[in-house]
Amino acid sequence: MSAPNPLKNPQLEFKSLLLLVLAATALFLLIIWPFFGAVCWAVFIAIVFWPLHQRFVQGSHGRRNMAALASLTVILLIVILPLAMIIASTTAEASVLVEKMRSGEIQIGQFFQRMLDALPHWARSVLERFGVGDLGLLQKKLLATLTSSGQVLTSRVVGIGQVTLDFVVAFFVMLYVLFFLFRDGEQLSQSIARAIPLHPQHTRRLLTQFATVVRATVKGNIVVALVQGALGSLAFWVLGLPGALLWGAVMALLSLLPAVGAAMVWGPIAIYYFLTGALVKAIGLAVWGALVIGLVDNVLRPILVGKDTRMPDYLVLVATLGGIVVFGLNGFVIGPVIAAIFLVSWEMLASVRQQSTIPPA
Figure 1 (cartoon, rainbow, N blue to C red):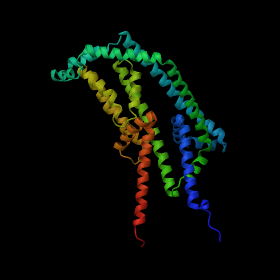
Figure 2: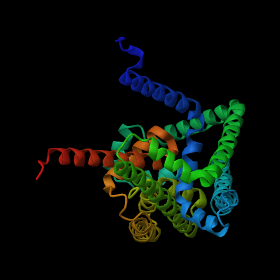
Figure 3: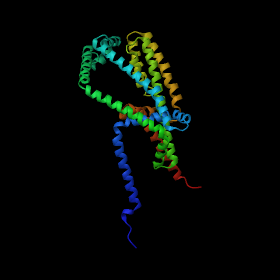
């Protein structure tokens, strides 16, 4: 009887295969890392618009290429094109506002001076200890910051062009991947489900929770942010605030932080109006921000997001902040998704352990 071949050991073959899979996965993630954001947004958009794509599939009688092209066209017309127009308008208004500040048409020092004069003596003394009460020094620091920023922007024109080129390339990569996700999404999801080394029930739950959180986060957060930004721009325009569209865009961006984001913009402006004696504007903006803008967050977000995420608000806030810190702007979706997968995985582990400890009847 011949001795068994040690290279034909099933355990060794499985461990070698597992090592090969891990190494290939790590290298694959390394090569797609420059386009990580583009691939992520392609996946997010495909999940959000998948029900619409299914209607196009039914209307085209199963011709998936035509359905994928129709879905991509609709997304370009109703999502990407309006968003690009808003970004272009906001950028133009921001450049005009900065030019007015540099030319002296808008005096930032006057705004600070009015606020300092309206503060009580003890508050001004506290600010003076931190060097904020010295208006002349504050203006010098502000002008120095603007000057250094202008020099940096001037010296890095090539870098800015490279960033723009990277953005264009990533944008077309996102559209390209999105087309094939629409066309081959069902086959890809089935392949991923078969490849995950989990119980089929756990795999279905994990993938379902992933899609649910992505759809709820993207649809809920982006729609709420746009509505709050529009309401903020309307209020600032009525009050005659310079750069109303710009501040509305800032409010929309900060509205991605649930519960506290929009108040970080209209709150300081209302305080400024109150300290400078414009009580009508201060009260009106505070009421508009607390009731109308805040009501959008409290009413519209639960309708769009629903109860499917099953995550408490504090966990959503912490996960969103942490995701933005780690992954940049993409983190406002990636953070809650990671938190949801974290909760689901621990719930599945707890249920498996509980089932294994229950004695048979």
